[in-house]
Length: 423
Ligand code: B12
Image (cartoon, rainbow, N blue to C red; front, top):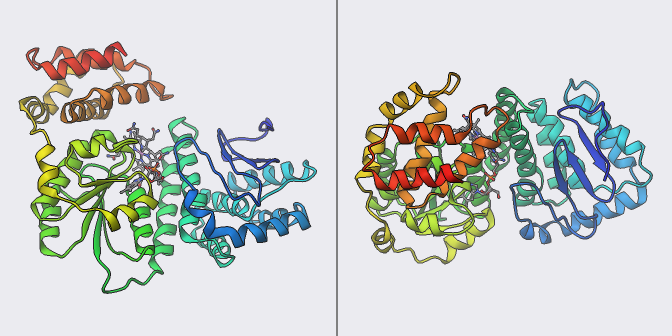
């Protein structure tokens, strides 16, 4: 493993031999070319589905790399260096320097593309990124693999850096916007079969993470579904009316944050009222189906690949799924109704610098805990917040301030608060 040189700053990409690509603080491990890529990032994904798809590419890349050592890689990256400003140019220069210092680097075409696309998205160069993606697709890499091998790792890395404070919000927004354009452009070239079953893809009410949902939509289009992508900001009742007006095989509901589980539940309920079964996915639902089931979903998937299989094989029974859902008790209603006044009162006893938004998020996670009858959303929120570089006041103090202003007879709420404070 090679560590980043001192001169390497944010945005720098360092490549090390043996198949590891170090992108800032995040390590993306890629098996040596020829063995098929095995990628491991902090949060993301399963690549089992892509290996067949790209065997021709892997073969070609193996030939190219072994025959030409790093020449092809240097050329590919060299092409994108001139004219680029910092941080992309410095990132690519450092990249080249590292390459030259190495005797026999082995790079796959995917790694090269990922580096090129990373530098392009850092500069919001949609056209360049698209060209690099189309080039590799022309060589045989499938669209699923472009998503899982190139775009998702980059997005995960940018997100990780953002949470560490290495990227400003504006930089993260610029990258995400470019990513959305790339996914939409690539998916936009897929012409659907007019007789294929139709699905709607939407983000849970309150959730503004449209990119994962757009990726799901793109993926499903590729698999032959007719997809209507509704994006974010659709109130659940409106969604229900929309679904009732059309003929839809399923609602595909994406939710990236547990804070929005109430919004997810509202969408599921509205969809069921319209007679449309729901499959859910995204970080908010965790790594098994328990949250999905408790919210009345008919299906759950945590990967783009699975969702297609679920949609082909499931036998949804919305009435049965609804029967399992625990009806929201008075404590949840109270939290929703008194949200604003709880925030105002709690802020009064907290040190300056704590924002409304911080307490909004905390209360939304508390509401999710009450909704699913489990302290996990609140506990996870507390540990996420305490790990943020910006956190000055520990989350336990916020939880105590909230506990002080909530009616002591709200037993479940106080139990979740006490558990989160103790953790
Ligand atoms: C980009 C981004 C944003 C953008 C979203 C822009 C957009 N147009 O999408 C903006 C700036 C708006 C944003 C806002 C916020 N964000 Co944000 N965001 C991210 C970020 C960096 C990337 C999300 C993404 O696109 N990932 C790429 C996708 C493809 O990967 P993925 O989500 O892991 O999804 C995988 C699976 O879960 C699955 N999957 C995902 N969705 C679905 C759906 C279905 C149906 C299926 C089957 C599968 C599936 O497939 C993917 C591939 O395996 C993540 C960090 C990260 N690393 O993901 C934070 C992150 C999700 N955000 C976070 C936070 C806290 C926020 C804010 C509260 C920040 C703030 N203080 O304002 C707000 C909340 C906004 C809101 N109301 O929803 C936290 C959530 C923490 C938590 N524990 O809940 C994260 C994890 C960052 C962090 N570590 O701090 N965010």
